[in-house]
Length: 109
Image (cartoon, rainbow, N blue to C red):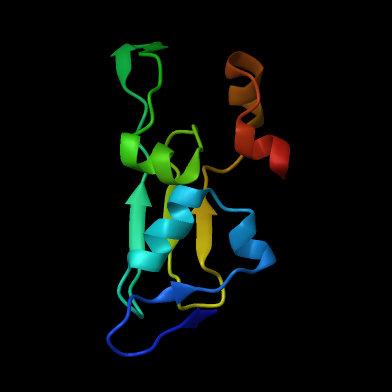
């Protein structure tokens, strides 16, 4: 829940949901304009050759706010809505997991 009063910076109330978030993300939400939404994509995997990828490195801003290291994820941050933070991840691909191992998001499902 976001409480706003005029001539002050918006304050994100402490709840169980915000206590589970990284402090950087909570501070980012506190500094956002009321009723705004931030959409922050993670980096894509870069292909080195036909069947080999470069080692994955997440975008710095995405990783700083979320701490999540899976490619092609999208963070949606909306401090004034019921769901303040939503993380969209790639669908689980069982065939790909045989070759690459399980993705962090698939372990949480």
